[in-house]
Length: 496
Image (cartoon, rainbow, N blue to C red; front, side):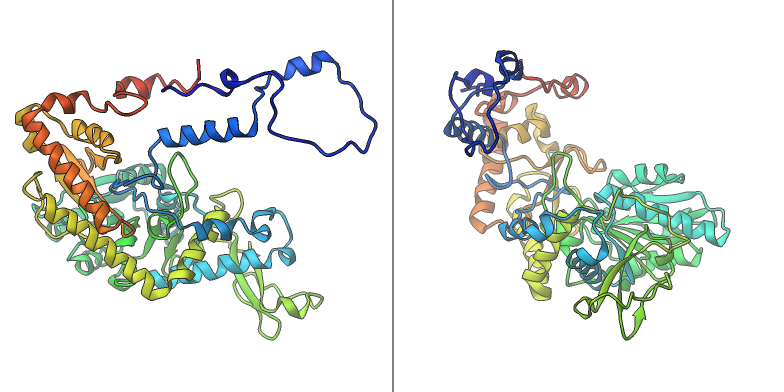
């Protein structure tokens, strides 16, 4: 049944609150003030049930399977929420002085160190507010690096298997994106890269594993080709969740990368936020990172970093080591965030890393790869598999074999909703026609995967025996199939 609005559920005289006894003289504001509020009147149970019913209508990762490839809708442990809601964190204001925010500064300092250790890089900024924002920050850092060196380079190479935001980040940074074609295995072709790379190229952006879920086997050679021409190599680290604890990107020769905390370290995302996209760099790029940077000083050793500050002798011994914000960074690209990043998201990621430890993070990556390949093995032959190379955390099928029955990948995605599951990413990557990009994540059980596999097999069978069921899907959701082109152009978010 359609859910009524709070105004329609309202009944005069009901209330969900009680106020303490007045400790000042009562004043009658008059009827006009009461009428002008025009707010719904409901009991507490009315409000609780209304929002619970709304949450059930929507599909979310706490409700059911959400195999959204590339975006990685990972389950978010509740302990993370407890940590970021601790009063000492939740009650902070970003303009509070350093002496009153030592715990928060220490957490950011240690988290940056953890991410540096995990990736092998020398320095990390936590400022970027999302993955695409991290891309932009990283490419801006690359641009500043070449400006400092007095080199005029205006091209960034982007493989056709990269994430879709890569070319946009390149263009916003003032570079020209140039596409590099993949080979028939879906991998970067070193010979093609050598032809494309010259003294005009500033950087190559690599998504590894790429959007096919395939780890680039020639990654060291690729970095060597770029470095030979004096160019840098940027890693889109959105898929770090497939190899954390197994492979460190800096060891392969990458110069800079961004990290999606929501994909690898279980922080929530979706619906426009929150998010976080820290950027890790080599020593050569560290001076250009956004400022301020959280640094650490000790009374007996002085302040570390470039600021030249000395510790105030009045700072109590209990604040030794002392964490502070270093603004004295003359080569920095400047701020990319109003304050110090998405702090509550950083607390969640810190909690997740500390809870799992090195062994747990590696196990999570290996479980993600195992789950994806379990689905791959079960559905290979049911749906087309254009690229046969073994994938890691996600697998890309194609619904092209259903075209003969008049069925598109979109129909498969809509039908899955009737089975109580969210659809995979569809029609991406663009190099796969009728793409179905499936990423189950490490937190899904074998039972959940088997249920998804059964649904996908049954939908493929329905495409042959009852294709109209797919074309009419979904039939069990609160809203039937929309005209998606019209919906994106004529957005209707008002309740009538």
